[in-house]
Image (cartoon, rainbow, N blue to C red; front, top):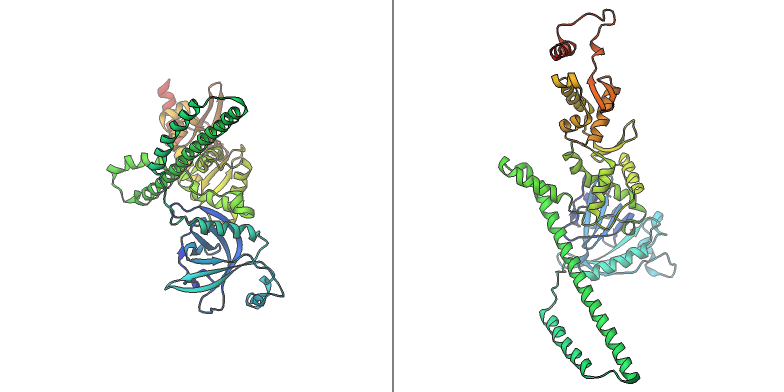
Length: 442
């Protein structure tokens, strides 16, 4: 059954690489592959089969990866979740779950949900894979109890802080008035020390929790501003583009609100990491001219993930999976061994045309061009510009000169020399221009 047929559930937005789009403050909690949503005893409600099930702090998202479409079940509509049920011959409800023989032996999680307008339906989530359903159920219960969709940042009452402040001097005065005498005095002083340390530790953790709460709020605010800038950038005039461009440069690297982790994704870790990386890197790569060095992407992506850092091996494995997905970026390896990430619309011919135009300028015909010159023209890093120059040399467009000053590249004039008459001077073309420049220089 297609996802579109399950119109009794609200639709969910999916990114171009197949990741669910999370709302502000929504955090991904767990992933399960190949999950089915089967309404019990209600043929009017269409089932969902073969979906990637994503548990977030707000929803259960059923993502059909081949069609990149999704439906969502809000956690607020769940009246009661039932623990995982496995095949049991003594269970009278066994016949209810036996509609599909291929999935009858898999564990099931039953959810009693409330659907508008104020009616209650019982549905069964049938997991058709060897996943740890118990862990999923535990995190589902935690997410329902947390009610993150309703939660608001709770400020510490001012009265509580005042009472502590007023009580502290009283205890201190009492400790001063009572001398430390005998064993009882030593025990009393030890207890006061522990109480003071506990109070300091509690205050420290309160400050830390407040800081973490504010940091999360700032991340959500920055994400909203970033999405708004990316959406409205095409509608802005030239006068506003300068300030918005600077602001966008800052916000693009603020961070990922819900990074994919091994704890939440499990066996799907590298697959989901690959999709999230494709979504994240698309804009920075386009802004860098269509290509970025893999080491730069590694630093940028890890900075955006905050404390959830990934290893270079994880990054390489995530990039290698792009061939299986329909994503707008790809991993490329130059002959020198340098690995880059580039957009699929990136054209080497366009780059070669710009390099050739640069190499045919009068000054370049005389002195050649360096990787720095090419980097300035192409708007990319010198290391990548050097790779483009070497690639152009392999194509026969340039000639290389290596000296103590480094690499210099010249336009290839041998293509314009007639092998049958090497002394023939042409009156047109690049060869003629080079002769004119060389003659004027001497």
